[in-house]
Length: 146
Image (cartoon, rainbow, N blue to C red; front, side, top):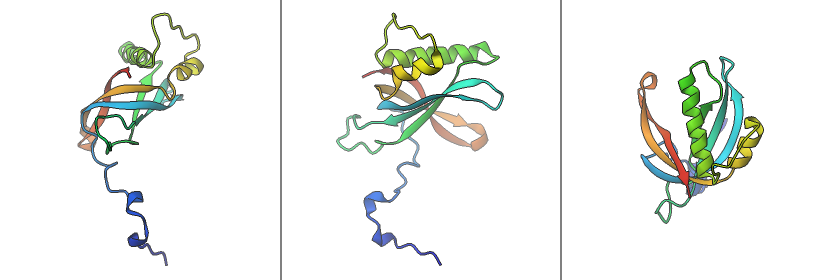
C-alpha cells in the first residue's frame, strides 16, 4: 500500500496552486528557455518557444517567478497571413534580444535559436478565451528589450 504524509514534506516544495492560477495580464521580465523547430500534424514547420518568467517584476518576491509560457510561430503554412504574423513576432523577438536592422539570418532553423536563447526580454501577456475549453489562457502579444 502506498501512503503519503504531507506533514513530512517541506511546505516550500508543495504545489500551492500558484502555477495553476491564470497568470495576470501585464508585462513580465522573462527569458527564452527553449526555442526549436518542430512539425505540426499537418506537416508544417514551426518554432516552439518556452518563456520563463524572471524575478524582476517590481515585487521583492515575484509569485510568478519560474512560471512558463509557450508560444508557437509557424515558419511555413498555406495561409500567408499566419506566416506573416509569425515573421513579425520573430522579428520582434530578435529586436527584443538585441538584434538590429543589420542582422541577417540565412538558416532560420539553426541560427535563430542562437540569437534568442537565454536572452532577457520583456513579454506582454493578455488573456485569450479558448471556446472549446471554456477557459481563459495567457497569450504573449508583445516582446521588447530589457
